[in-house]
Amino acid sequence: MFAIFDEAAIRRPIGNPEVMKEQIQHLIDLTELPNVTIQIVPTARGVYAGLPGAFTILSFQDEPNAVRVEGHVGGQLIDSPAVVRKYGVNFDLIRASAMSAEDSLNYLRTILESL
Image (cartoon, rainbow, N blue to C red; front, side, top):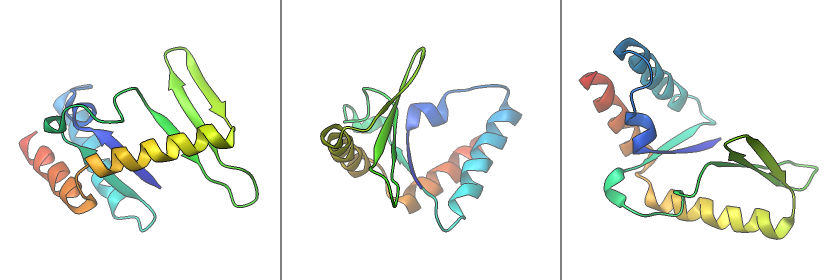
């Protein structure tokens, strides 16, 4: 699983400082799993392909890929191959804007220490 977060989502205080510490620690713990990669797009990057909103690309062995797009009142599942390919390109652009997985992990540790 690849998860890419905007720095603002990581930094936005949700709950008290103890809750924030637990959330950041949970992300750090997830990076230790062999099948999880977490990357962060720094705010300093400015405009990048991920600003329009969250989406999840679902890949299947025996079925066509799909994309789940999140909205204010729910999500939408899209299975059109052409649209799924476009989201794949957007994912690659977002990932190219993000810090490396190692730099992202170090950044999460820095945030945790500052809380």
